[in-house]
Length: 160
Image (tube, rainbow, N blue to C red; front, side, top):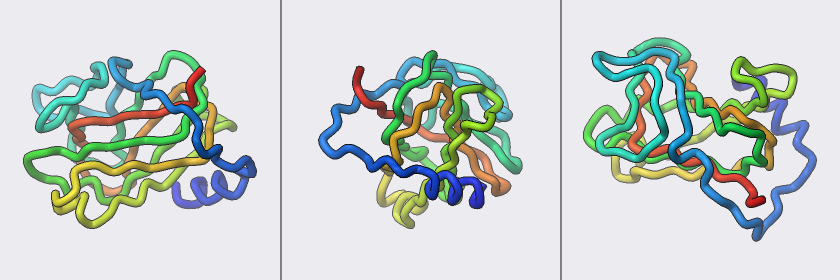
């Protein structure tokens, strides 16, 4: 993931347009998980909820993948960590953006460097600006052995 993300960043020549109008596009969109924990399902719709709105099992390469329904020009991803416990599980996150659910040649990968406060719970939200990337599917994943569980996940795209 690290090599693909570095390659993606190198290939992105278009600068991020400052002042672009962004709209949140992930709310109420369907998601699928790599696995699920206990009675939590592996499918659902993106909706903010405390302490979390989804929960994967513990494992390597766990993910949540959101289907935006159509290709959009994505610019920012915001994550609100689990609000009650186990916040440190979000230590090594990547965003994988693609037109197809299983990826392809157009797949872009971005590291999401979370600050230490996010893992300790002193900061619950992180915002990640990325180069404008056209994609229908947004996958947040970790190559570590961990479980993922966020209380909110927002994806912002250019309006229109």
